[in-house]
Image (cartoon, rainbow over the protein chains, first blue to last red):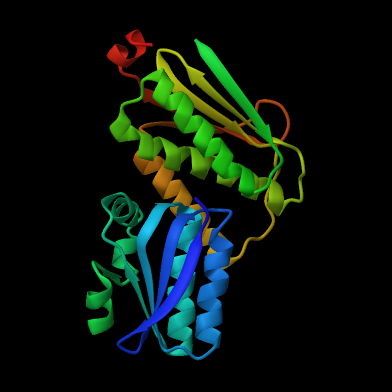
Length: 111
Length: 136
């Protein structure tokens, strides 16, 4: 399944809804979209992975890059993920200790 | 024993194809269903690694993959890239994360230089379930 990207605003946060597969082919599109949001002045980004079926190390690298870029811009950056297969790769790589992970959009936007 | 071989130009778009083929062969070989997600991820990581190695040195030669259905399910990925140039911070994160993932999810993993010429071989193996194979 190809990557899908859509944004909506929830409680002053810009939620980037990601769907499909985030891999070495599609991750650059996600990187560009996150950069566009931050460059446009968005100060609170939430990346919602609820509809992501598959993610590889390139996707993880893009999320870490997004966190760094957000911090440099003075913005907040959160990731919503409740799917166990994805949470497992966050844990394996210890990125669950680096990326702010939330179980739901409500939890991410309430922070 | 049956082998499916795949060769592709070093383009990220083809990594997904390799994942799909690899999981299909794994299923037929009798890899338990609860391991197929890890097989898919590992094949993707190994192929993406090979593509990235070729791209960093501007090498257009094909990446080769073999999926072998035998006493175990064996996946081999060959690249032909030599020493890498300097890479960016985000690329380095991806390289490090990819290595962590492969080491964590593949119990039988070997990464070694090719015997002749530049490049590396990633070899990964998974046990297969006998009952599944008898039912074929």
